[in-house]
Amino acid sequence: MKTNDLTQQQTQTKRGGSVLCRLFLALLILVCLPLTVCAETQQTDPGAAMKERWGIEILSIRPSAANYMLDFRYRVLDADKAGPLFHRKSRPQLIEQKNGAHMSVFSSPKTGPMRTTDPPQAGKNYFILFANPGRQIQTGDLVTIVIDDFKVENLVVQ
Image (cartoon, rainbow, N blue to C red; front, side, top):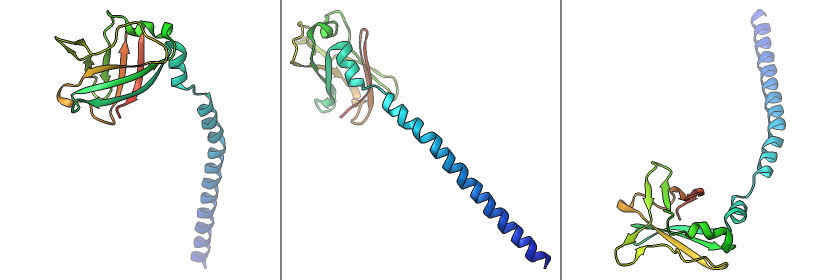
């Protein structure tokens, strides 16, 4: 009879423990769910910030020339705001986030740097071709583009 009582007490303890565990999980969900919803709604659209600050819209970054170059494309929305990106003295850099490798603008002796330095025009698309020696950067990699004070992070190579 004592073993039956002991078994009943263990069963009740297990039930009580699982009920407490369920209540704790339910309370945790109720508390955390509104916090995550609020955090998601408070985040700003990085594309909107880019348009507001620099007057451009990023279109893509893709491999080109058998993956030996990376083609960064963007559209100018406000020529005045985008002007600093076109200065001849600026040196655009593409940084691979995985290992920190820096890639510069591809340049050949006959054509010069593969980017536009003429004054920008609103509504036009522009490109910058970055060298990708050894095909270090592949589709799916995260990169950062820096042009003087301009910096855009977490671009996914398409």
